[in-house]
Length: 394
Image (cartoon, rainbow, N blue to C red; front, side, top):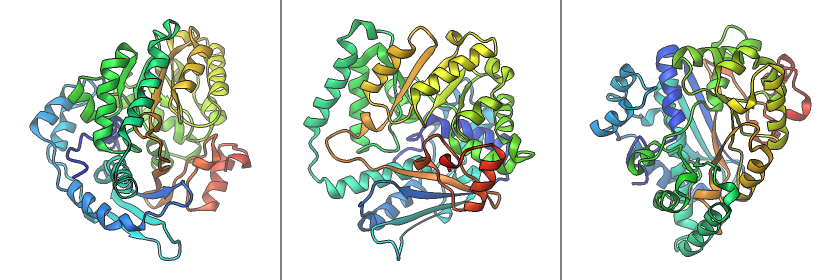
């Protein structure tokens, strides 16, 4: 059984789920799966994935796990009461090969947002582990450990990097659950104070680490269908988040419509209200420079705000960005695949994204066009027009 706890997921799934419970309990959504890695055949794994997902749908949170969630300052008691009754349901997910596209599989999730939001991360972790069990039956963990030691040494052996803070964001694309656990144990013992925490709630609890996360793309995408009008959906999402958390969990996601649209909406009010923003697509140096200038323009000292970098980072890239922005803002770095799936094998670039909410198409249009995902070209064109997004980002 690959997943044996509902806490084996990213924190932002729970923080968004709480908003859904309180603000959008009746929302209906649809998610679709995509493998961006060319030439990968996942069809031999369909039955194994189905079995693992069926096991996932038997899980309930234990009293100890509920007590842990109850102890997080931003988790409300009625949400924990709801989670005490919660269980994923196989009727909301289907997994099957795509007949006319050899090697590809269709993973479709459809149902109430409140009852489907926790599928994404464990299902992606399952697909990864099932695939690598089949294709790499005898993993070279010694090579993985060597690579991990080399990364840690880059930071630990350089006194100028003593204030670098790196977090594990690698649940969804990890090589395996056991390897993820070993990586975190090693980081805790060897990276020490340079380890900021982990996005994985189960391992944060198990290893005494800080659980990290706020919002993901699906939240702001759903607001396209749930807000008063499309043009105001981003500000509606930020305002609803602030109403739920009252200043806590204040890192805004900046790339659902690209940086230009984000900065147009992220006015002085939001600059002061939110603790910072997270980068997840496009050039990170350009993003950081623009965000710092935006804070200054809005009479906010960027040194009081946090820039979170989380787009495909390696330790080398972390060091480059830290040296560029050190002293100009607070900095945080979320490293995923480079930590949890770097043993010498090509990692899978797989995603599960929301594509509809309440029957309406939803999408993101980031500064990295290859990350965009929508099944309705007409809606993409309309979204681009409403948010004044160039065709290059479609």
